[in-house]
Image 1 (cartoon, one colour):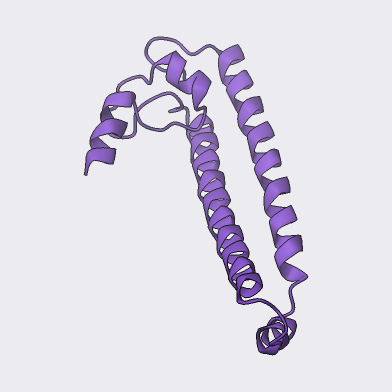
Image 2 (tube, one colour):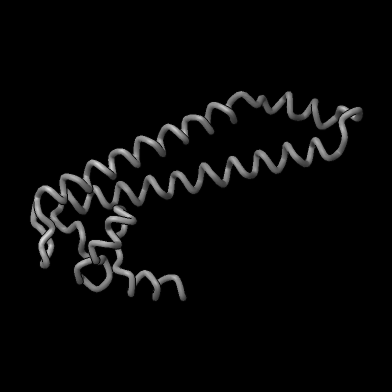
Length: 130
């Protein structure tokens, strides 16, 4: 494992690997909870509920909103898992802590706050302005 130019030590890389693994485990647990909740919803039951005219329209709207929220959360979690995987891959390749765009070292404060960061602050800001 090669360290970055300004010196991520082997101990620091080990700590970041541990944090990434912990974050991954937490996200996977959240994803499993969401999948368990959504798998309990039988599409046939949903169609019957929609045809139940005794329910208030707001109940159906709330159910739709809840399903949409869960789908958005699931998509967000999967994106975060992809970011963590990319950071772990960079550790394996010896490029962790180096910006994917400009090749400069990512500041330690940024890595400590966002261990899955693959861009330095400047490049990330440029990317977000696009």
